[in-house]
Image (cartoon, rainbow, N blue to C red):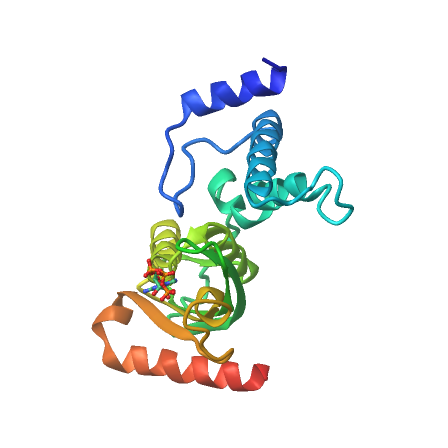
Length: 229
Ligand SMILES: Nc1nc2c(ncn2[C@@H]2O[C@H](COP(=O)(O)OP(=O)(O)OP(=O)(O)O)[C@@H](O)[C@H]2O)c(=O)[nH]1
């Protein structure tokens, strides 16, 4: 066994497999990441062999197994192997307690069923607690990116983002809305039109209880979406 194969064996022993949109208990360190990329590259080689693609001699696919392995570990599934973003918070000194809406935030994810891209936009509405803290605006984009970098389904993605922000910042209310294209639907299978999207939202605390707040959030999403065009 090579050193890297040994490291991977240790990593695999130490961590149970998790659902495709769950993170490992402990983020991968550099050695664990390198070992996982090596092991994944060997499996992608096998897959290309099964598909009768001569990647050893084909100039186009010669480096594809390692390229795909790196993309999976470091990019598409990064949110499973790294810690959530660090959150910078500021004291809510003026006791601001009205709705804040941020977006569109780019969503780049991968569907759990066919491993095809999901892309679209997210909007987050926050009703801060008077005595609580306010989160740095860029952190919402980082949180979306963290949870999107997993094999996802959209219903669980909005919930994971919402639950994480609620637990971390304890706002009075929170809303997460995603509108996205699923390429498993547009690029294959039913071959839906490229404009076909799925929209869903997750509401927490006072945003769940108040119809007025939900309507205010949805109208701000529409305005932000329109101004982004
Ligand atoms: N609700 C929901 N469904 C999704 C999401 N992403 C993909 N799907 C659907 O998951 C389903 C997977 O169903 P299967 O019937 O096992 O897959 P399939 O035989 O390839 O089906 P087709 O996609 O219809 O060709 C499909 O209907 C997808 O459109 C998602 O985020 N949410």
